[in-house]
Length: 102
Image (tube, rainbow, N blue to C red; front, side, top):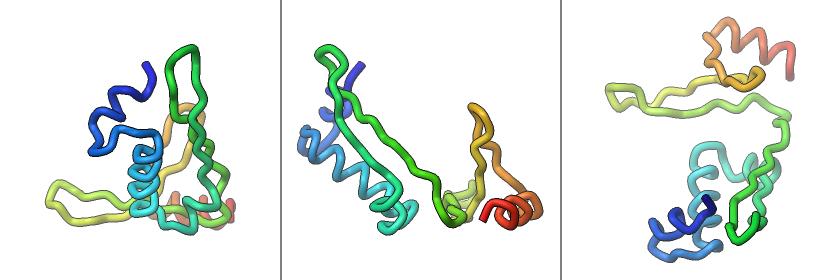
């Protein structure tokens, strides 16, 4: 489908502004250090459509996702990629995984 519809939702409908917006979201969620060293973005064309290709390198440290619960409070969660799913780990599972992985 390409990025045209995505570009049209932004104040400035350009690839540069799209990348800046996306990087700002990622920086807020995961920190500038992680994003600048582990995430590569490119904008190849498939036919006439421009897409955003994001390559994510493995982290050398555990990375927690901060979300808001139903009450609006920020909480941190830990997810692991397993095949084509990303299950959330409970505290004990996360501790075991972190101990073995890092």
